[in-house]
Length: 208
Length: 71
Image (tube, rainbow over all chains, first blue to last red; front, side, top):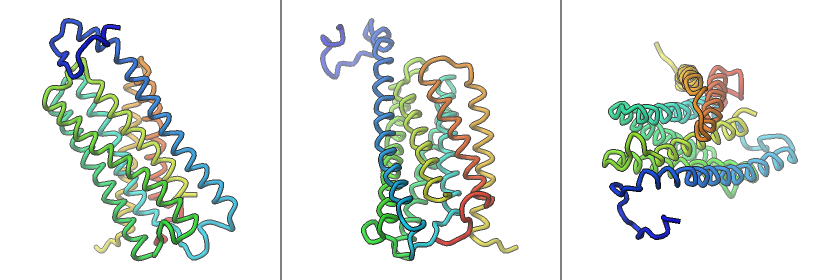
């Protein structure tokens, strides 16, 4: 395969076969990224089903001594994250149509909303840990499962925000073009993924 | 007029939920005919985003969840 003979780190932007190489490898990279998302989905699923199993095998939920979570604030924080999914979608759409200024505005809005969601989660953790004395290790199944799953999701969102910042800087420096923007597609897929995971987590922890 | 914090959070959640639901539904409609595996995945994600926005809106209204109880 031709790719094997290219030196590592070589700048292929102006290479005569760069377009063909991009076309040939794009499908593979997309498959690889989708497999990564599926594996992440399996990871979350295993924790979610473990949580649901433990929850249904106990005596009522939440356990004695632990009150219900603050649904009002969680709804607001959820809307912030879901809103960032919409702005990310339109960032990619505007990039595809060559509207850089609109792309930049939507991308920055996504980053700000993602950071806003993380701030909200930090506020909620602070309230739970210091005001309600709910901790990961000291509150039984509820604390362990809540902090593990929402913490794991929060980690994914943190990585996502960093990823989006890197993508934005790359796009400013001309790494992507109107026709070659797989990084932005992957970033949008990842961001939608963390949104969708939160739909499930929000429902199982706050609503049922 | 005095508005307490949970009411303000609920109001923003409901308004935001409606906006996100409408925007995601419009994006889904616009992308409906686009081919390619990533676009099919986007459509699934946008559909779930729409569902999430509706759930958050209903939670804000108080239809879902135990709204208003402190953590």
